[in-house]
Image 1: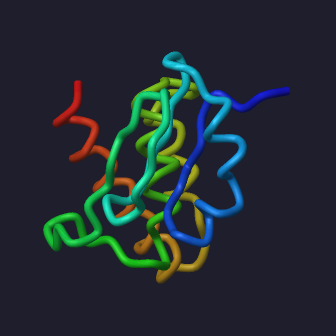
Image 2: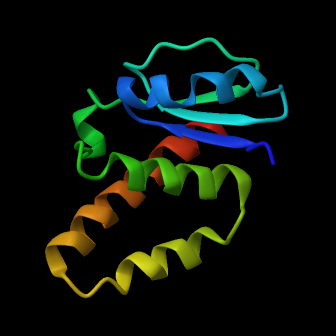
Amino acid sequence: EEPNAVLLVSGDGLRVVKRTLERLTEKDIVIKTKDVPLETKAKVYEIDMQDRSLGLSRSNIMAAAIGLLVHITNVMPPESYKAVIEAIPKEKIRDENMRAYEAAVKIAATIK
């Protein structure tokens, strides 16, 4: 099967998914960090790691990308994704992922 969404948060990842990106269509989605340059037919959503108000770091950027994907596609209710994060037993990990979720909510609000 061909993916209909790609989450791209590093230049290394770009090298891994290069052929996949070439096959994406206008119906597909790419969520990427702003610093990763790419050309694709897919609809591209960017996460700006330099925006300090988002509270993102390399350790939680993928969680933010997943949260944004959830908000854009409604693949699951965003509240359910949030509940999964809230159920993480380790406080430090839970807090880091909650910051990522909140960043995704902010980004999603600007594109809807």
